[in-house]
Length: 72
Image 1: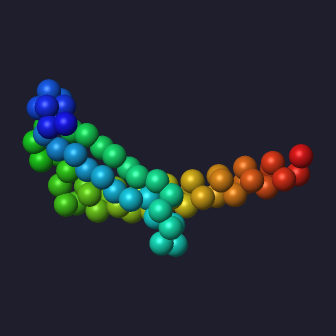
Image 2: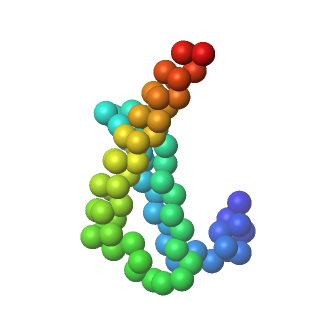
Image 3: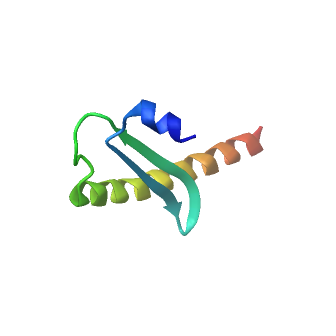
């Protein structure tokens, strides 16, 4: 499996859980192949805040879809 990472040549990988009320609803996976140091602590903090909003949006979408399907 390590040969896969040798051929991809990534500089950085950032993974963040998408959590809503402690429930995992997804994972944000980002790859950086271009610039070293792209995932600074400040950028990671912003992405963490955005991941919380994304998790809420995913949950809201799933709730709406379920309600729509129940009406049919």
